[in-house]
Amino acid sequence: MEDLEAAESAYDDHADPSEANHEPQESANVSAWDDGGDDDMDDDLGFDDDDGLGWGDDDGLDDLGDEFDTPEEEAKDDMDDLQDLNDDSLFQMPPAGRPPAGCWMANSSHAADHLAAGGSSSALQLLNRQIAASNFAVMKKSIINSYIACSASLPGVPGSVSLTIPLLRNDNDSHPGKDSLPRVPLSLKNLVTGVKLGYKAFQSGKFNDSKAAFNSVLLQIPLVVTNNRNEANEVKEMLEICREYITAIRIKGAMAEAVKNPARSTELSAYFTHCNLQPIHLLLALRSAMGTSFKHKNYIVAASFARRLLELPDMSSERNADLRVKATKVLQKSEQMARNEHTLNYDESSAFVLDCKDLVPITSSDTSVECSYCGSRYLDESMKGKICSTCNLCVVGVNTIGLVTGS
Image 1: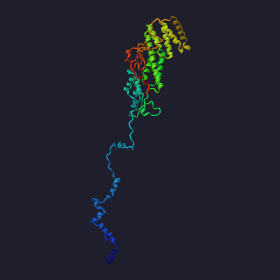
Image 2: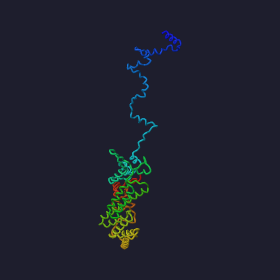
Image 3: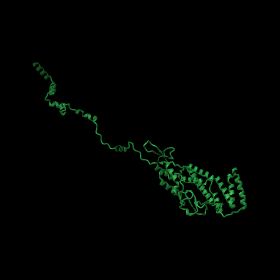
Image 4: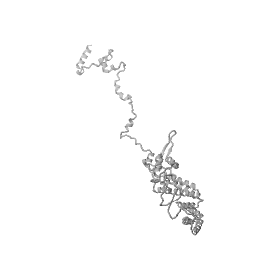
């Protein structure tokens, strides 16, 4: 024991003065296992905060909370994403465009384009203002066709609605956008086909069929859109053709009713030859007038019809050889007789247009009213404000801009 005490004393003599306040390690170990526990040691090791669980302190794990803990989801507003779109640096919704039907009505003053857009009211107003159209019932078929022919329906998947696709007439190079115009079902080709049918029926003597064909063309013309001035002129020419042939057919019907009246029958046959007909049809008209006037002993007018007939280019062909001989004989006989049996309201030397109601001549000195669409003239002032007898569509005596053929 003395040796141990001497060694311990020697160790204390050589110890570092800086370590004088530090407790030996052995003493610390003995205190750690002490049943009573050392309060200072407990404070150093942090065992006093374990709440009696005996597993030690886990305060060191607090730093891991941000990485592993699930953050509470904040209430999200459904409009937040839409508000973000207001930022110029993000995607922005394009502005809503005008529907095709709205473009069609804004881009055109033609009734067919308004009908295609479903604007039947504005379309009928245009027709009334432009050509004084009033009896729209006769155009019902063409009006419906103009509406249903401007779009196509593409079936979707079962249970879904069909997709309606507008059909455009000005999208040959690219989509016209806001300048789009609808495709219309009636064209210049349809008018030509109708006129040819009328010619064929007229040539065959089927005058009712011919009149129906020309009437159909008259009712289609207001809904035809032309592409240029040449087409517009052709449409207006067909309008005049229809008017002349319908008038000629009405005269032909009146001739059948006046068969027992020689003077009136001769007058009507003379008026018939002044309608603007095709050369082959004019030949038939002159042959009929020549025969009627010669039969009723009106030789003066018979001679004039014979001369006009012989002057036609078609009379030089072999197929008309017999008619040429007959016309020559009538001319010779009429020049010999040189009288009219009846007084006629007809003078071939004076220019006139025909009244389309009473079928009498209208000279330049007479006052008359006119249909602003088909151009039919009326000597009777009472026809003003009434439906035209030729086109059966427009009101007579209204001064308008006339037929509009382009958009």
